[in-house]
Length: 95
Image 1 (cartoon, rainbow, N blue to C red):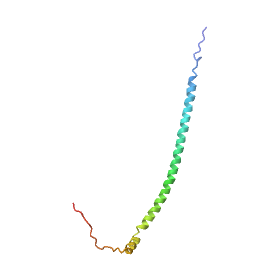
Image 2: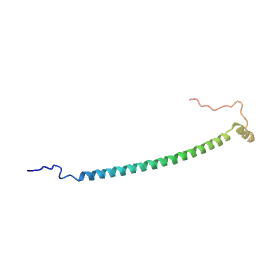
Image 3: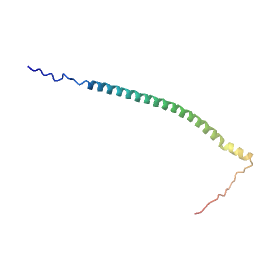
Image 4: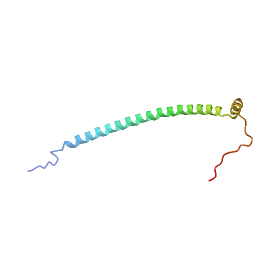
């Protein structure tokens, strides 16, 4: 009598390929997670730099507005002997 054993010679390559695939996917996941963490760190450092630049910008604007204050400019004009022209005549170009 013949006994048929269909799965006697099992392929052992399948589980090895599956393990390799799992390790490759895990390595890729760790690599991508590391990239995300590094990018988040860079974003946070850039945001703090931008906040510092915004403070510097507001300080410069404040200094600029103090420099172009109309009372200060009128005082500076009087100190330099400038006179306000009541009826200025402007140059014009006709095309």
